[in-house]
Image (cartoon, rainbow, N blue to C red; front, side, top):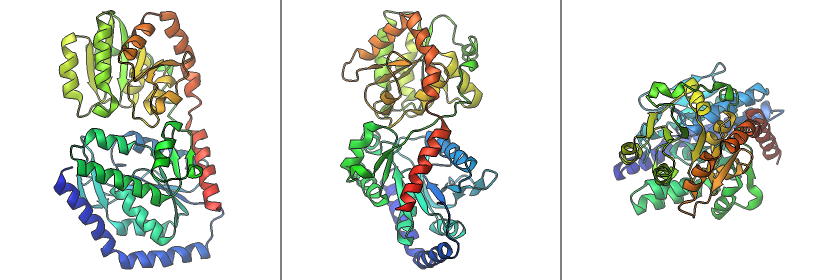
Amino acid sequence: MNFLGASGMIGYFFREILLNLPALWRTRREYRKALQMNPHTEPWIACVSDNLDEVNGIAIASRIQLREMRKLGHTAFLFGVAFHTRQPRREDPDHCVILAPGSYSADQAGYSHSELAVVKLDAFLAFLRENPVDLIEFETPGPVTSLCLFAARFIGIRTLSHYRTDILTYSELLMKYRFTIWFVQTWTKMTTRLAGPVIIPSEAYREKVEAMGISRDRIYKLPRGVDLTAFHPDNREPSYWRQFSIPDDGLILLYVGRVSAEKNLGLLADAFLDALQRRSDLRLVIVGDGPYREALQERLTPCGRAHFTGVLNGNDLSRAFASADLFVFPSLTDTFGNSVVEALASGLPCLVSDEGGPREIIVPGVCGEMFHHREPLSLRDGILSLAGDPERLARLRASARSRAEEFNYENSARAFWNLYVSLWKT
């Protein structure tokens, strides 16, 4: 997003507030009247997020979490904005996923095929009049959630936020201009404080959230879940990689995720090329896409043993996880690491950094290992150590699935629901 895009975003943000001031007052009255006439016996919940209208970790996880909430018999909704190239719509059999029309959109910095949009506020207000929810969880600090947060607080709805993405770090890595970085970080801190209590997916981010001005007793670490049915060791196919012209002649190292600078893929490239000098049978497969892909391909392709598949979904992704030999995830900025759990669920041992959320998933010596992010050769040494010990890899593979089963969606949904109820009652 350039300066003009950011200026347009801010302008339309405040335009929506000014145009809808009468509707805000009306919704405030109708909301309170609706709850007085028909008080709920348990809370109605809504989750609001930017970028729901694309394939990303938050969008997928939010939909599955919603499905689990409704499966448990609770009233829950997802609200976001439709991309400008797509029609506003409602999804799921119960129409509980609402993708409302937007009034303005711009490309999102550092993310291809993604956009930030300003939602039409009257659509959100109409949603609240139709579904007077008691508590709203805000997933991201973007323009959709910020505008809806302002409206929710004005109307008097309880709110909380979820620090799912390390925006403070990502802005430093992905944005060029100091003013833009300052603006995004300041906006993130302000919206996080305004929303109230904060959910974190790992202890690694408790201090960062606390530094934004959130008291420690209002920060809640809750378990995350992944789809344990879709990812399973039974999906392993020894010949799977042939469709990508990858010979079956050595150990397959796998990375799955965004191909972007914030994922620390430069370190992975260094470690792999260095390890290849000592173990010529290694192959590295990168699954995903992003702004760093072209540079990474230029760097790795000459070695002849690095391969890029692009984005894989569904059964193709499940088979890719299960058919590799070692999952290597060098990121230092992930708040959790869904792909790490998906790898474990597929019976794939993992090598992750000792910085960030993934370190809290891996039990060293049981389902994977960690490298020391401050030691330049630690990732290379970790790859070589595991590659040179087939019996150890087999032991890690055998216990990976059982570790992943601790991260199931039902347990996650119940933990979130218990928090919602406790906040609703206060």
